[in-house]
Structure formats: structure tokens, C-alpha cells
Image 1 (tube, rainbow, N blue to C red):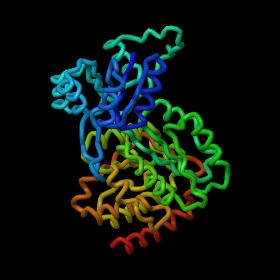
Image 2: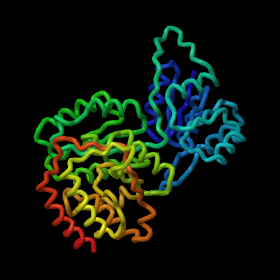
Image 3: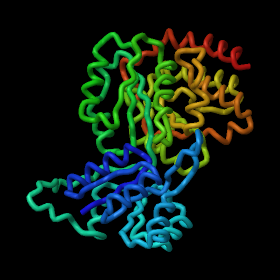
Image 4: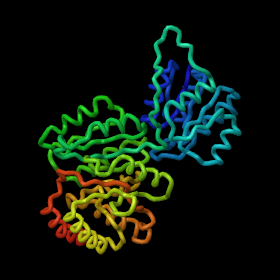
Length: 388
């Protein structure tokens, strides 16, 4: 049995193709509406698996299109009754009803597991016969995410602290995430650890290697500019290598930006009932003092600009990271200053969401010493002068 999978995001297509092939289906993939229609005519599939959000290039511009064009081609133009299963993160009710009216057989909403996808396909066209072919019968509960997200993880001498097992497990289970580790000129075996981590997850883990240490700000900036080139990524964020903010909280940041008009969602380490926020007492006092200064400079009531977990849309990633930051550690403050200067103070307040984390643990071996914390006050003055 032949399946044509059409989706503009390679991260999704690779996982779908691999799983359906394991089950014994013959699979062809297309990453655009045009190539999907061409393959439909030549491949003559038994089922079309289709995404809805399919931006197409028009000259040098990306134009918003939907997979409905493929449905119209098959049902209206070709008058063909090949089963169509839509699998999309687009949950617009009007769009869903329009596609059912056009004759799609089912509409599967992301996020969804590979197992559920396979079960829906089997219900529509049945299982392949697979005579003499060994197929996989293992369950696959990995999740196809609603959107594709690139995550920058800056690393400097993280050989001892890098939790390879957690990163590996997350990359394996959450299809649609791409983890980009930036090795910031480490002098230990961090690069070797990262290369081993990438070994079994080459499709969704990459390494950006900086030969010299440039500081966290430049490492994050280089990683984000690297990921912006990948058009399949809907959102781009960054996360500390020590996972002081864990993946559950980071996933919550993604859900917030997906379901809102915010352009950036920033984690906030606010101590409160029901949250496990652990800081060293001395560090906590210094943080509170510094934050008061930051609020004054920004002119915005931020509770925590320095949390190492943020996610943003492509516009912020491409426009706010194109120039080097003035400081090595306070690029978060600079990011918000750049946004304020570019969009205006009143507008920028509606673009930023500060979201409290449920868990944050200070990890031993942090690169920021108490001495560095004292220097921060001088760097904040430098930022205030530079962006005034």
C-alpha cells in the first residue's frame, strides 16, 4: 500500500516516513503543494497524508497557503476519491469544516503520537500485507508536535554537567524539536560529548562549533542566526545546558506562544506557592538588587529578565540578533532594549509575555561567579548609555 505524505517541515516528514515504512507501507514525501500534486499524479498513492499550513515561495517572499489546495485538486479538479487524512496543528474550525465538505476522510490535530497516526491510517485503508517483509510491531508513542521549534543550547566546558540522557530522551520523543548545541570554544571534552549525543539523533540535533570562547551572548546569537536559516522552524528559543529550567517548563513556554499573539515568551523564576524555585540565598539578594536596576533601565516591570529560557517567533529571532551584543552576559536585557527601540515602548509591552516557571534549580558549577555579579552593575550602565 502506497502513502503520499505532504508537509513543508522536514523534521515531521522524516519521522512520518520512517514510522510508516517500518509498518510496511510504501512511502513518498513532498514538502510543497506543487511537488505534492506532481507526486500524486505519478505515484498514485492509496492514501494522502496532508498538512494544512503549507507556505509557498512567491519570488523571494513566503506566501501563506493551506493544504486545502491539494484537497481541491484531488477532489474537485481530478474528481478522485483517494482517501485523504489531514494531520495538522491548524485547529481553525472553519478550515476543518471546509475540508470535510470537500471530502477529506479524517482530520487529525497535532500534537499527536505516531501510533495514533498509524491507527487512523489503518482504519481508513487497512494494514499492508507485507508478504515476506519483516515489519516493526513495537509501539511508537513519540509525539509529532504542533509546530517545529529550534532550541539553542550554549555550552562552555559542560563536559561534567551536560545531561546527555535527558537531551537524548527529549529529542527522541518530541518530533518537531531541533536542538542546536553551540560549543563556545570549550577547553575540555564538551565537543566530544556533543558529538556522541548527536550520533543517534542526527535529524534533530546539530552542533555549531565556535573555535574561540565568545561568551554566552555571542554563542546564543550565533546559534539563533544559524537556526533562522532553517525555514521549517516556526519558533526559536534558547535553554541553559544545565537544564536548571527543565523541558516541561520550556514546553509550556511553547504552548503559550503558539496560542497567543506574543512574539516572545520568557521564563520567570518567581518564588511562589506550588513552584520549586531554588536559588542560593546570596545569589537571590544580588538578583533582586540587579533586577530593580534593570526595571529602571527598561522602564518596564520585568520580574526576571535573566532566566535562561526564552522562545520567540522568527521575526524577533532575525531582527533582534543580527548585530553583536554590547555585553557577554546581559544580552537578555539588551534584547528587550532593542525591541523597545525598534517597536516602541507601548507596543513592545503587548509583545512580551513573562511566564512563571514551575521549577528552577540552581546548578552547581555555574559559570557566573559572585565577582561577575558585581561587574553586572557596570555593564548595565553601559547598556543604558548604548541604547538611550
